[in-house]
Length: 314
Image 1 (tube, rainbow, N blue to C red):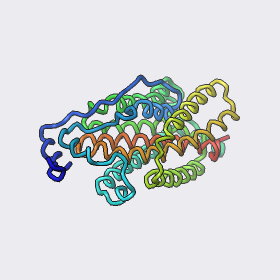
Image 2 (image 1 turned 180 degrees about the vertical axis):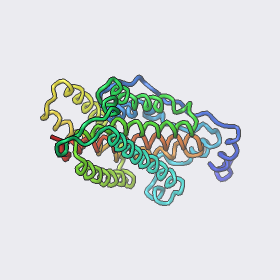
Image 3 (image 1 turned 120 degrees about the horizontal axis):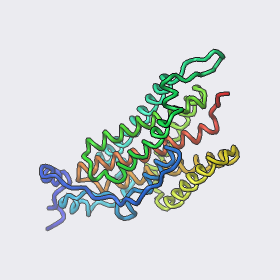
Image 4 (image 1 turned 90 degrees about the vertical axis):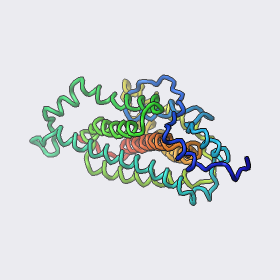
């Protein structure tokens, strides 16, 4: 059959959507239970993503025939003129931004419900709810709950419907808000806001670079993953040593690692669009998983920067 007679992705999608399709499975090696919800969630999402050369792909047979003739890595013109790619990346950013907003709202609402003003200036007293949340065994549930959602998405996204995957993502970001609400007990409010804006500006610039650069960033993936592992291990060690010097080093390396991951993940997500296009369900799930990676990059960069610029309560 001449190439010009091959059905388009849109034709294939319309032809097979009524029958339904399965999604390609993710390779999911066992994850590690780590100490910091943002760090170990990012580690798990990176560790459990599809292996190199085995990315998520749609299984629509006709769509895959069509996709054979689409380059895996788009040209600069593709990135600016492909309406499908623009819509896909907009979906990723919308999920990610919505997740960050939901996390912030839940974190602040939880903090507000957990404290009352004390007798002294700037003194905070935990309410009964705060005592339960921060000083009871429930704190371990709150700390470890995000891991459960990341495991569910990383190990089982291919078995979830798009709606269920969306709900799981929103629940994850809400639970992360519960977990991160404790930063308001450690740092004062104004520096938190300032660091949030610095993080947002840095993230935007780095993600824009990853989206527009013609340089392939895939070669940095192994280096960045090793850096992520190093940050996680050092953070675990510092739980016992409580060294401010080690924490400073961890924060410096962490900022560099998550800055690099932001650009790297953006390019990976953009390139991945050409592997999933043609299967609506798989494309939607890939957008959610891409948003999860960028969300965790943002949250961890924010936490690392907060160690530098945050004003700790006395």
